[in-house]
Image (tube, rainbow, N blue to C red; front, side, top):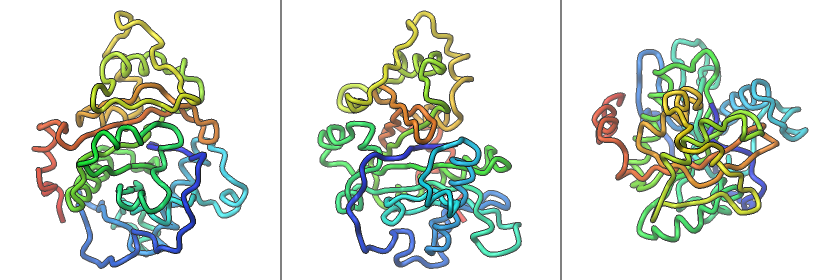
Length: 292
């Protein structure tokens, strides 16, 4: 499961502590289901462990091409890691410290942090500046680097990742969540059915319209609308994309091929006000359903 890809821009160097580390305590658990819990990383060592999980998924499983230093260290890492908060899912039945318990992770970047740290990660692929400019009264949050170890790719884990992101967004007064979602492989035509379904049925429009950057734009309009079997298209979707569609998300216009991460990306746009009432009721408007 991946949510975003390697950037072609680099944020400004910063001496700031990771947002995940500053001022944390042991009371920041955001949710629990059985033996799994979700919370924000509390230390640099936990962020390092999350980067190791990302390496196992992106490099070893999905064949992403990372830097020689990343390969040597067996860590997926970039400069955004030092300014983002890192949402973790931990298996509390595993003996050892929290680093050994981490089975999934999500990277969260609030607009106020991005503004002082070189911008959002997905700006290298999509024209999110125009989208944000149209909503100067709203607070945006980018979600990225989503991954879960194979043995934990279950409904419970996905629910906890969303529970954590939802609870975090409420705590920080977020109005809009967005981020890149990935299809495996660098040939969009191999995902013609799914991409065409997204283009014809859930394209972000009007005030929420956003497009891939012109130099990276790849059309998603690969099949005529009448030729798209919706049921088969949904089966062909990555689980994370399907999850966002159920929540009420829209998709930006155009896909982007990322050769480094061996993926084809689309942009998810999810205004809080458009989240399906069914899911608000399920998780709780106050994120209370799975609260610890």
